[in-house]
Length: 237
Image 1 (tube, rainbow, N blue to C red):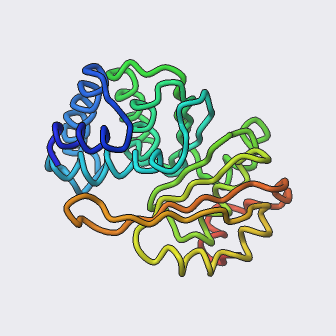
Image 2 (cartoon, rainbow, N blue to C red):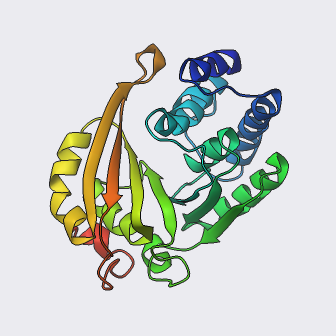
C-alpha cells in the first residue's frame, strides 16, 4: 500500500486526510526507518508494509469506534507509537498517553511528537503493572488500547485498571481472537469489564485477518489489580 492507496482506502472508510496529515505520515515513516537502524522498533521497513500493516492497521479501530470527540486514550506497550499516534494524526482532538517499558522507545516517541508537532501527548517509561497502580493514572482514561502486546487474559489485567468506569478497552488482535476472548472471560469479569463487540476483517490485498475487541468498563477494578510486574504473564487470571 503506497501513500496514495492509503489515502484512498481511508477515504472509502469516511476518513479524509489533509495534505498536512499526509505529510505527517510521510515524516513518521521516514523517522521510523531512520531510528530503526539505531534501535529495534519494527521488523517492517518497506513503505508498502509500514503504510498497510502499521498505519492503516492502527487506524482500523476508527472504522468501528468514533474517535472524533475530545477523548483521552492510553496506549499500553505502544512501541513505535501504534496504534495511538496514527489515530492522533487522523483525530487531532485526542489526548494521547503512551506507556512503554523501554526508555529508547520513549526517546523516539518524544522526537516523533516534536517532528510531527503533536500537542496533548505524554509518554511514560514504565511497566503497565506499575502505571496502573499509580493513582494519578488509574481509572482515568476514556479509552485504553493495545495492539499485539499479549494474549487477552494478560492484556486485560494491564489495561482495564486504567479505563475509567463507563470507558472502553480496545484490543487490536490478529486471528484467534475468539479463542483468546473465551479464555479471558473470567479475567475480564474480575477486572470490571464486559465484552461488548468483536469486529473481524481482512486487511486490503488479503494481507491477514484482524480482530478488534471492545470491552466496556462496567465497574471499578479491585485494588489488588494489576498484580506485580511480570505476574500477569506468569499466572494469568
